[in-house]
Image 1 (tube, rainbow, N blue to C red):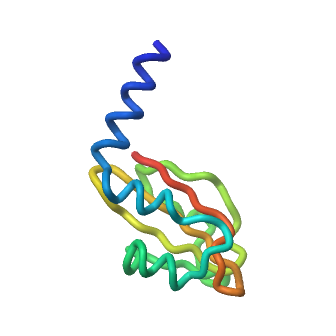
Image 2 (cartoon, one colour):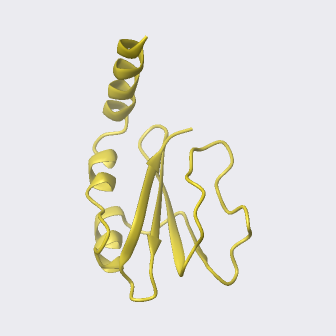
Amino acid sequence: MVLFYAVGAYLWRDANEPYFSRAAAIKPGMAEAEVLDTLGEPWHVYDAETAPEDYYVEGYGYRKRRISNKVLIYFGGVDLIVYVYVDKHSKVEYVYIGGS
């Protein structure tokens, strides 16, 4: 069973290249401008003041997290979603990469 999940994860990652590698390069502490240079314009941006309580994209994975300043949401590859949380100093504070 473990082998089945390992092969499935590998195939999912392979199907989402090269976007997966670019998303995985986004790390806490990076400038927001670097994120935009790496991933382009996000599909959607929510800021802390105006985001709905359940701002996650239906049908895709997520990790429940409060928005301290804003979150950039990206789609890429075959079945990939990326949430990039940016603090008030325009630095990445957290990245979530998942699928549906």
